[in-house]
Image 1 (cartoon, rainbow over the protein chains, first blue to last red):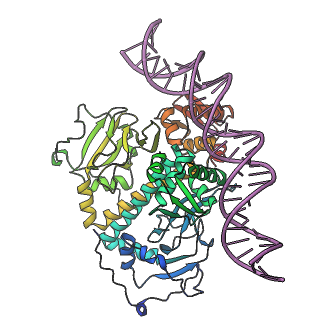
Image 2 (image 1 turned 180 degrees about the vertical axis):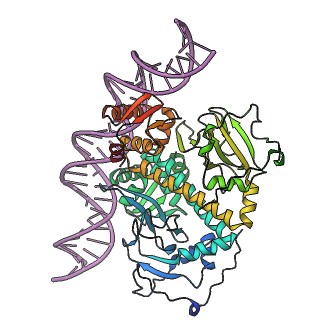
Image 3 (image 1 turned 60 degrees about the vertical axis):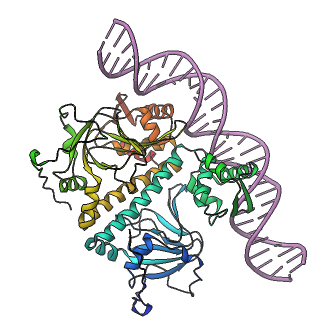
Length: 241
Length: 241
DNA sequence: CGACATATTGACTGCCATCAAGTAGAGTGG
DNA sequence: CCACTCTACTTGATGGCAGTCAATATGTCG
């Protein structure tokens, strides 16, 4: 589909623009051990903007952008995990999505963000000006189609999320979540129980109890609260509704 | 934004292709009283495919396409209301969206439908071959961008739906729903209580009780079960979370 | 009018939320 | 290395919102 030649422009060609609304780079970039995971469409897209993008680190729990702020940048995750969420007046929070290395977020139709984005872990992002992306998409059908593909992918995930929240039990929600996150045997949870709960439409207590119950059934095992081993993947799949 | 000249190609130019997976046209088209509501992006898009589209009627509660069927067509709603939903094995159902005149649905990334679509009321659709749309989008950035805009709009609605299902009470869900549907004073509900419940992640009984309660508060009034009058719109908005 | 589908209402249950301790890990400093 | 502390997580007791089961009422259409 997408051409796979991923040539980087040399660093000296890159713009060294000053980023007003974002923290300046304060430290040498953390060794991007997860950078290898960056692959596929978003990377191919990012390559098209090589020379205009900026790499920015964010501390754990820092705000990447807030609700209502202008949508000036498109965000590519290099390393770490990001949560995109909305806060209601009375403190209720709904996490729309977690974004992991290779994902793109923050590209919206409107000119202001409808959600806020925060760093779940230390995060490294590459930022490309939205205006650059939109301008290129207006000229190049391939880029425009890539944007469509991205949005349609987000839509699919959001639709699955709707099904999960609308019609699944606590056990099914947690099982689905673990199933999605688990690539190998061991699942590393970068997020807290509160984050899981706010993604799954539950409370921390229910998430915790459900995990304990899955452990009791021999379906999962804990190495630590954030490190889980899937002992019986087919049983997990059977539970996910 | 979009150019508003809505020139129809004469009927004799249209392809009269045979539609295998869809019902053939059996009856004269119902007077499309709602057709005037068709406006904006989707219509502009549809115009670009004039000469390749087919008009098809569907009876109330008939299936427009099923889960797993090939995504051969893009669907434009001319009149009536469509529900797009997913059925779980045990009978639980989640309605992803209702589509009203002017909306587009059934355009997905993959080659098979992830949801089924059904006619809530008698429905008239215009169908355009997906391959035509995709081929044109590959050449024309304007069309590709229109597709992106459509997908991004669907994504926004799905994200609002996630918030509703994840963190809102029954009262807030019903209030949100009425608020969205109500254009003027009176709301015409084309769908049953079961449909509302399956959209809102509730049961028919809870939907019914909540409506009765809103009536008791003087916020709404019933003309009939499917015809509701908003008596206090600001109170309704205050309830929607 | 009569019959069927749809909606409302009532009584009770249960899942998950809430409120409240208690426990375990990670980081810090002695 | 161990006490100290803080945060994150788990566990327990109880409550409430919405679900379930069941009956009644209302609309709609032949």
